[in-house]
Length: 494
Ligand SMILES: Cc1cc2nc3c(=O)[nH]c(=O)nc-3n(C[C@H](O)[C@H](O)[C@H](O)COP(=O)(O)OP(=O)(O)OC[C@H]3O[C@@H](n4cnc5c(N)ncnc54)[C@H](O)[C@@H]3O)c2cc1C
Image (tube, rainbow, N blue to C red; front, side):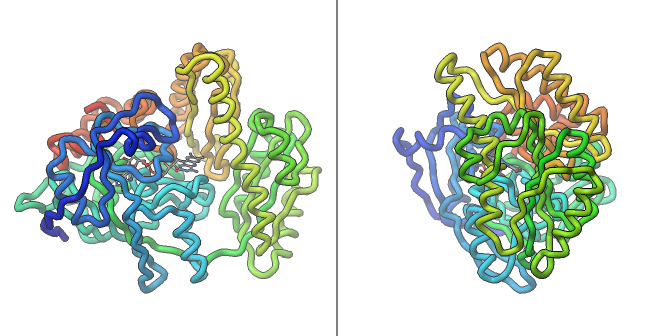
């Protein structure tokens, strides 16, 4: 349904002190600058601003790891005032784009409900996670954001407000999506590339014959419209055991993950020995976990349980014995939220420790030093082979590195640990080689973080779909945003 613009004006702040906190995202790419910032309280306030602006960048919590939420001269349109939350029948919820996921989960939990596709960083906002088709640990069982979005309200580049409901507008047999707005009809050509068949993907526009229009906006990273609200599906809050297991090698960790995937597992997270070596002693002490012997790998499994978890502990024990795991696991039983939080804190300690190390190296040596990391996914059967590829590629380039991630999906983050600017340059070459290796295995180099304004990730998108694929995406963009107003430079150059 299309609504008319309602023309309420909204204040655009331009003061340097107001803009300063919004000039960077979690990718920490330097040099962000903005023409102004506004925080609409609803779609009607956002519409006239977007209609009249020359360039607009929607932002959520700016936890993007791709530079996609770093402004480059745009007017920033922030979502933090879009905080509606309304319970709907059948476990659904209507949520404003600016609701942080942690807040959504808190409110849902009081009704015994849960929203599954939450990234490891739960401070991200609902709109940002839909815009990036975010995924997270529980994607193995529950899929990424796309599967949980029933409806969206979106402000288009010309200021039209569109309410999209899943199932209402689908592509014609000859490959067009039709959307009427502002007295005209946009005909949007459905791209013809074939998306890799992997558990999660955040690699430009969704495209499939007969696709639903709503799926075009999910994962479009702010380039096709400003999402102001969404109707989400939820599930009853599951009871779960959280188990931290020490494995002696990658091979054992992959064998164990394969076995765990046959239990009622929502997530298995992986931290390799190099990642664990980055974590300072005080984090181990705070989480009451002993540092494992050199070379050992951690798996952090979430296994859903009914009752008190005894049956799950028995199943886990059987699987560990079958896989030859000797060390006793740390287990937080259902209801032991503090025990679970301690184990999660160790997992979160891995990226935060690397970030702190990079910040220190940058301060000590050179401001241009930055994070270089992959967000790669392979079909699960290729996982062990892919880990060997990541290690051999980094080692061939003489790089320090660490690997962690959502291993139950075959999705990990191979990270360079840069010691110099030279490492950053060689790291980029290594990550591109890894990306191509992953594609040759039937996987994808853009699993969950998106593409953003990262030149490296835009190159990967081009490698994935070719020049023709990028041209097809640009045709979609032209149909909805002919003046290239929204998030220009995100996904592909303007
Ligand atoms: C420690 C850490 C762990 C992370 N773990 C994960 C993980 O497990 N899985 C995962 O998928 N990601 C992860 N991320 C990346 C990040 O959290 C996700 O990409 C998240 O979805 C971004 O949400 P956000 O609200 O911060 O959006 P932002 O970073 O503000 O924006 C991201 C993109 O979406 C667009 N956008 C934002 N809001 C809107 C809107 N309302 N309408 C249209 N476009 C919009 C922006 O223009 C930008 O292109 C992690 C990040 C950090 C820092």
